[in-house]
Image (tube, rainbow, N blue to C red; front, side):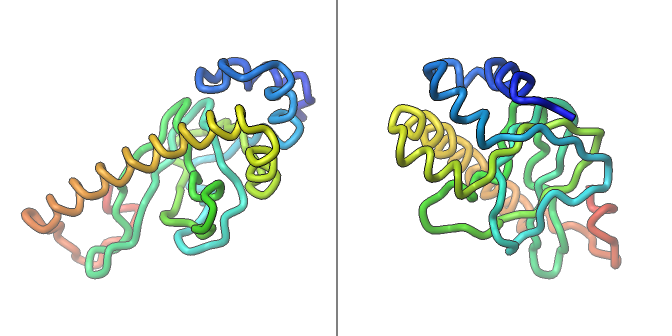
Length: 168
């Protein structure tokens, strides 16, 4: 089991938290947990209620969306220091915009969404850094998704009743 010192040490290794004060990092550690997940595990499903924002520390996670007539399509492969579950922190959209499936043994830092939103409201320096990072992640994923979907119209995938695990 991980203790508070492990979580604080981990937070201090994440580049986008380095600009935070020690007090802000400690407050983040209070609402964080370290988690492990194994290949095949589903972290969350598209349309489900948001509950956690994750920062990957080790491993890989496939982020997938359901495209009618094509099934689940991978739009992103998260690697160490990538953020997934970003919509948990947004002001209005609090349902998953994609699904996340573990590809390799994964270790991640998990922040419970509601306490993180509250902390961002209370600590504006922390909130600005978190929201700036989230906006960069969202913009990047939207661009990547748009390019992939555009490509699908030009080169549609063959759908021979493949499961989402086979569409990789």
